[in-house]
Each structure stands twice: as structure tokens, then as C-alpha cells.
Image 1: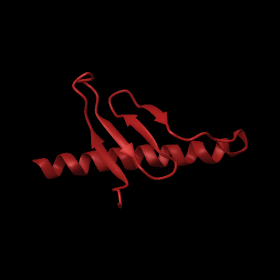
Image 2: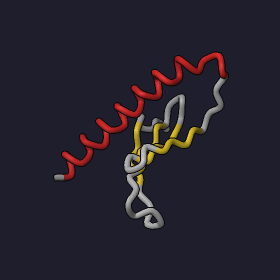
Image 3: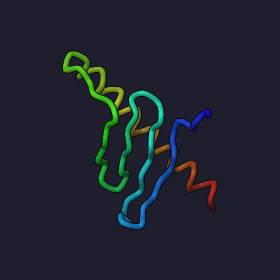
Image 4: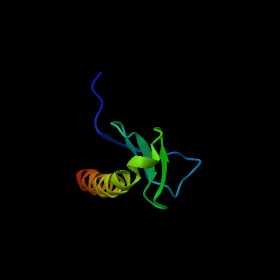
Length: 74
């Protein structure tokens, strides 16, 4: 099965949160309300600088995905 790169998620236990699930490496869930990220991968310290840059890009892409999805609902 081919999964979309980003998936919008919600949960009634967290009514204020908006979750975006990133399904490709590095896999994670971000709560757009708090910017908390839960990673499904482990990273080497030697790649830390590269991962910081990649993380910033992925957060931006997740936010853009959310904005696009909300626009489509309206």
C-alpha cells in the first residue's frame, strides 16, 4: 500500500491538538498547536546538524500540508 507523505490526525482525548503524521523517513508525529514532535526513528549524534535543518524543513512542510487541507475543506 502506498501511503501519503503526510496524514492529518485528531483525537478526542486531545481536543485542542492538531496532529500531522509524517510517514516517510524520518517518521514522526507533530502537534501543530504545541510544536511537540514524537520521532519514530533514532538518530546518530554525528548527524545532529543535518537533522536540525531537515526537522525545520519538515515542520514547515507539515504546516503547509495542514493549511492546504483546511483550505480544501472550506
